[in-house]
Image (cartoon, rainbow, N blue to C red; front, side, top):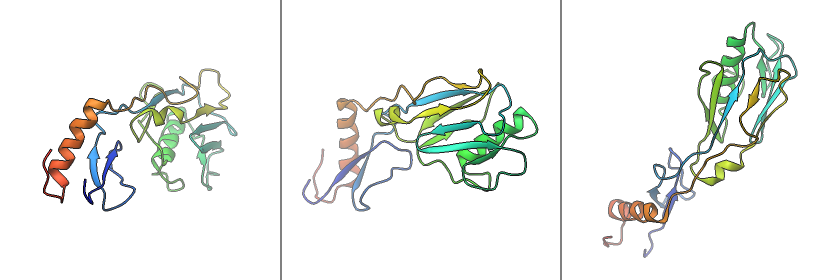
Length: 171
């Protein structure tokens, strides 16, 4: 509108492509894709998990020194914690995953969720080469992501115009 440029944003951090754009927050209207990971058996050295373009490899205890490496831990609980911390970027080795977040394991299940709402998250790969047959993703990609409806986009745009316009217009 005039020189104002409005940008629809479906991520929690409302990351704009151009700093001067006016945000239109549709994050509450877009469903984030997710996938479940079951890990009920301790991984062995060489097992891998790939989420998006990032691959994590389990290595022997004390040898996880490089990006992408995760210690198998002394117990299953330690391996689960190590995977969670690698995805979160809090293990001191890996950086936070750029596309997803993860929950801590509860009863051997972790949920991995796209950071960006909408169907774009449905394309994030989730594969593994875990030796134990019961350690498995619920799908080969994140699923159930859904875009914001047109009606909700209009509602969000009106709110964005009312809150951020510089053109002295109302919506």
